Image (cartoon, rainbow, N blue to C red; front, side):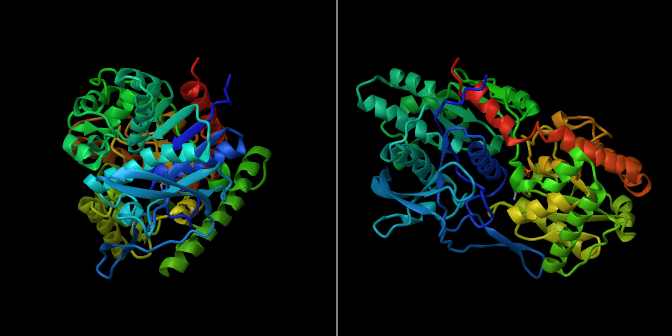
Length: 537
Ligand SMILES: *Cc1c(COP(=O)(O)O)cnc(C)c1O
C-alpha cells in the first residue's frame, strides 16, 4: 500500500523544470524537476525547497579555437511569485536575509526558492552561481538551502512529516531541525534521534570526490554548525566533515538511485557506523516533459512507428542545421550522446580507435551528435569537450557538437536520434535518465551495463548492452575491454539491424517503448518513495 498522506519537504540544490528557468546543471536537477511535476500529476503531497540562482549554471560556449568557455547572465524569472516571506540565516556572523519566491508555473507542486540578492545583504552573491564555488562559498549556499529552507517552511506555515534531502547539499537542514529541539531544551542525543526520525536521504554519486567534505574549522567559522560543538559535528560527519556521511547518520532511511547503485553505495559507505540503511529506488522520468505521445500511442495501439520516429528525426536534423549549418542525412543512422563531460562518462570513447570508427564516419554510415558541458573548474572535462569539438571539425558531415547543453537539446536528442550511446565506466554511473527518455521515444539504447540499464536492458530485444558488466580497478584494462565490446556490437548488431533489417529495428523500438514506459515513469518512483522511504511502518 502506498501511503500518500506524508507531507514531504524535498530539498535540492537544483531544479530542472523548464529550459527558461536556469536553476539546474544536470541530472540531479532534471530528476528533481521531474519529481515535482510527477507529484503534482499524481497528487502526492509535497513541496520543494531550492535556490533562485541569479546566474544559473554556466552557459558554456565554444570559441574559435574549439575551446569551451563559460559565460554568465543575470536572469529575471518573471514567472516567480513573491511570497512576501523573508528569513534570516547567520553566515560568517553576518545576518543574511533570504527572500522566498514560489513557483507552480510548470505543472509542479509548489517550489520555494531562496534568494540572497537583496540590497540590504552584506553578501548578496551567495545565490549567484549554481555550483560556482567550493569551500566557504559552497557552505554558504548550503546554509541558505538547509537552514534557510527549514525557516522558510516555518514562516510559510507548512506542516512537514518527512524532510527529504536529495543529495548531501541539504544536510544543514538537519542541523536546523536539531537546533529547534535543542532550543526547546532537548539534549543533543534526543534532538538527533527525533530529527533522524523525520529525515530521509538520497545519495547520488558513487565517485568518492563527488561526496563533498569540509574541514571542521571551516564549518565553525561559517556558522554552519548552528550551535553544535566540534565533538558533536565529528560524531555526525567525521573529520573532515563529510556531507554524505553526515546525511547518512542524520536520516532514518536512505536510498540509492538504481539497483546496481544500491550495491555500490552500500559497499562504499559500509565503514560508516550508525548510518541509515541504503535501499535502491531507481530514478524515473516525467513522461509528458520528455516523451513524444505519438510514439507511446503507436507503440500501444499500432500505426506507423517508423514514420512517427522519422518526423522526430527530421525535427532534430532541422534543429542541428539551424544551430550549426550542417545538415545530417535522414537515411543514415544518428547516434546521440549528451552528458556532462565527466571523465568516467568517457564522452569521446567511441573515437578511441580511429581505424575502426573513421571509415564509418567518412562513409556517413554513422553520424554522431554530442552535447554536454564540463564543470567550469574542471579542466579535464573541458579537455574532453575540446576533443569532441576537434572530431566535429575533422568529420564535419558526420560528427556534430551542440554547445551549451540544456533541456531543449536533451529533449531534441532523446527524441530524434536513432541510437542512444552511453558508455560510463561501470559502476560509476548512479542511474542516468537520458537513456529512459530515449527508450520511451523508441531511440534504442546502446550502453554499458551501468546505472539503470542493467534493469532496463533486454539485450538485442529492446536495445543493446556491451561489455557484459565487466569491472576493473585498472582503468586501462576496463577501457580496452569495453572498447572492443562497443565496436563489436556496433559492427555486428547495431549497424546490420539498422541498415539490413528495418522490421526488426521497428520491433525493437516498440519493445523499447513498451518495456520501459511504466517501470521508469515518475509515478512508479513516487510510489516507491512514499511506500519504501517515507512510510514509517
Ligand atoms: C535528462 C537530462 C540529464 C540527465 O541525463 P543523464 O543520463 O543522467 O546524463 C541531464 N541534463 C539534461 C539537460 C537532461 O535533459
